[in-house]
Length: 253
Image (cartoon, rainbow, N blue to C red):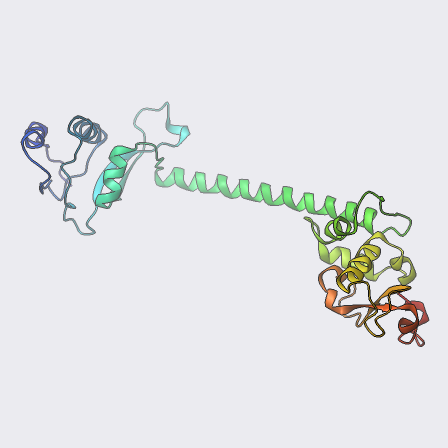
């Protein structure tokens, strides 16, 4: 494509005497770095631009030859260049704000690769954090020898066992592998059972009694995920609860 000389003096004279009217630049013109500097200078001086129409080339874009801004090329001569197509609006914004980076095709591939590596690194870090948090969760809330600090209220206990960046599937797997009586003594279950009683307004669901309340599993389908399936639980008094466990005394929760 042949480069054509731009009549900057004519453009400046035009800006001096005219209001905003259409003026056209040759549709085949590719603006260089030097052109952009002069256009910016004219815009700053007169507060308006000569570009009120696209160039009329195939895709209706203003074409600008831009140096690659990848840091590898900063100190080098003969930097790789890239032709960027702008819509009229984006071209005016580009003239006003010269703060966007543009990479040549090779450097763009390098930049994309670096970003992918960084994302993978973050993913690995998050994965490591989840493993660590899951281990801590199991040690703190699934050990039947542990008890809650009295200063931690019921709401806070339930929040602690039902939130966090952990692997809930590994936690459920650990719960399912436990002896059921041990499970009933864990801080996990005590927090869930207490929250269920609170949701049930501290009343037996059958007789409406309020003494010797216990939490009953209506189903064990979601065992290990009780904190997310409170619908599977119900508050019962000891007498009513015993009716459901005559055949399963070992699961007298």
